[in-house]
Image (cartoon, rainbow, N blue to C red; front, side):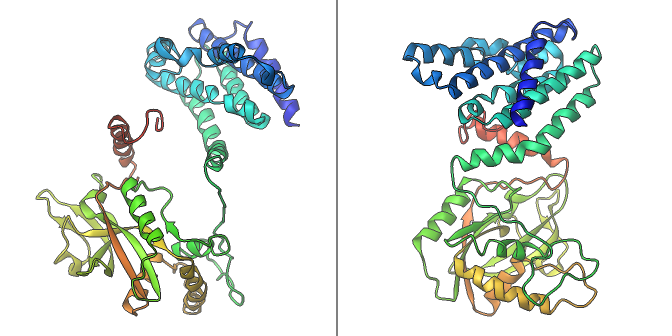
Length: 401
């Protein structure tokens, strides 16, 4: 079925080369992409029949030039992969959108070598769908085209991203389910949400057998925190209690939003650098005088911009998962009838382990700035921050667009 769809897509793209059904303004763009798609198809054919592997060095160099020529060196200045050139040709809105599409299509070369026909077909069909919209109107509604590309990204980005991650590391997926409960327990009538971050970590019990780090997947923590937690785990340090854990201690002022109040696990650290308390505190923000204010009257008495806070980045060992398996049963036994919202939360259960003397948590200070999108307005700030990190050489060019 995939091969049949792919062949139909290639047949349609071959026709695009000779058509004049889109406005002249966009014609070269679509023909250039059609030429590239057909070149990749030709490459795919030569790989699959074995001819590619018999090429001389000179022939391979020639192929490499054909595949990448328009984005290398001086050619990039007039390539549709260059957003500056595309926006000059098509305006800001369409320029950015079509440059994104162009770059996505240019990313299919590895799929030819990996023989992933399904992925090639997904991208080629997206190209055809956008092309058809420009056929129907001299210039289609921007939002219509944007939605087409948005839903492609929404539907398939996890698939493509997962494959790229698998090429670098071994990946296991586990899924948090509402009804994944110990024997003897049932989901209360009316409950629709899973049971919180503690249950989410517990889902890994049958997969994770090594020291591990827990993070929120939609937060940016910085490189320093990962290095420190890694070094802590491989050191095998014994802090003298049943459970030894580490926590990335972010500096409060580095985790605030310019667009409103936030909730943070404000931490109290003892003289040995160990966590003694975590106060889950809402309404935290910095006022015009540079003073931190919050909703907790007790915490307000001593909170400062340089206090350590938990951003749910923990280091632990497999025995912690064994503890969660038993403790989750205790939690469920104490959920009152009719309570459909109570959650088994990681910061709370770690705090309980500290208070009953079962755990020691080493607070590993990180001076990195934490980024997260708490408010819609935070998006621009985060994008600008990643751009600055790239320009500073912390991350390579092209990693974040």
